[in-house]
Length: 225
Length: 225
DNA sequence: TAAAAGTTTAAACTTTCTTTAAAATTGATT
DNA sequence: AATCAATTTTAAAGAAAGTTTAAACTTTTA
Image (tube, rainbow over all chains, first blue to last red; front, top):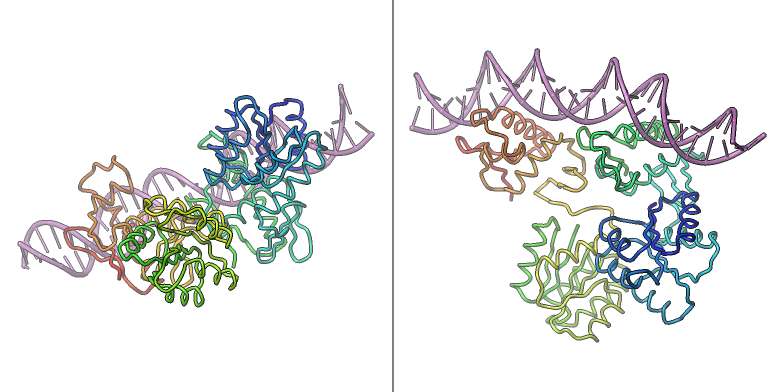
């Protein structure tokens, strides 16, 4: 789960980053309107936490841009002032939630979790794929009543496979989704190979089925149904 | 991806049909309120493109019917009049997007794509050729419900044949398309022969039909319809 | 029916994938 | 702050699959 933090107070920004990273989110940061704009245009996020007052422009403009680009990210607006008009403006522009500073990090996390649940997975907290039950919030996977212990990378990989189930996903796109956009080493998919194989083995051990098929020269395909 | 076009202007209807079909959507057409009503009741669509002014009734009534039937299709409203009240009425009744005539087909396609993405359908646009369903995003080919396992070269070759369906393609152009401009050895099409034959055999094995006809001295022709 | 074009087959070659294990990093605990 | 355990990354060798080549064989057409 990728989160973009657009916030100009460096202290708060770092706090949010640290806390959400601890909770298993992958965070990227933007401290100005311009940087935020670039990131929104270029990359895809699951959640965007957006401050209204930014150096270089108003956060609501970024929200408008986001909607114009038809981006799917859920948006949580964060504002210093508790003004009703601001809040309404944000929600009317398609924001999903609104918070007033100051706030507890726990509350931030709870709201981000709720947003992920509402947005990405259409409200259903669990994803069921054949024998597997995946809970993206709890970050657990179970099969026939027992949990499959996955590492963080394995879990993210599984989630990515399931979102793209029955599609061939290239190692390039896996790398981009799990390691961010800074994955420039074009030849080196060693770590993708290794994690995929480890995940595969764990799932086979529990489910007795190899859902992850190798598509030689193209990538992998998570098959189901 | 199935699209229902409800539109009473035959010219526009055909243009939309042609364009969206080229983009990999499967289109059905309705020119009157009554036909649209029947199709909505009887069949399932991923996207419905709905004109407001129709012979026999108002498109908004169809929208209401759709919601009453709990149909999941995304609805894109198309209307000649750029009236704000119409737009609001449509969106309040549960339409997902709104376009004013006249519009460019590119824009229509972009909005349909966005709608599909937003509704987070599992599938991607598919190209259907007789028994074959080709998904260029998922990189899969299926026939009568089962996948045909193709290698990368075979998949690219099939895609190239289908883009040029019912046209003769020379071995030279196949070579250029699959191997780039560096294919200078004019005499040597051995590898084109071999891949074409391998693809051909796999398709025959699944579909029982030889879509790829040899045109002696000219090349190959992928025949359909 | 000869020449040209297409098909088949299989071996040589190349690329990609799997496996394994060690090195590096991260996180937790004392 | 140091240590230990777990996770992630790197690397390299071997296996598997795909691609190309080439030669023998078959079909088409002039």
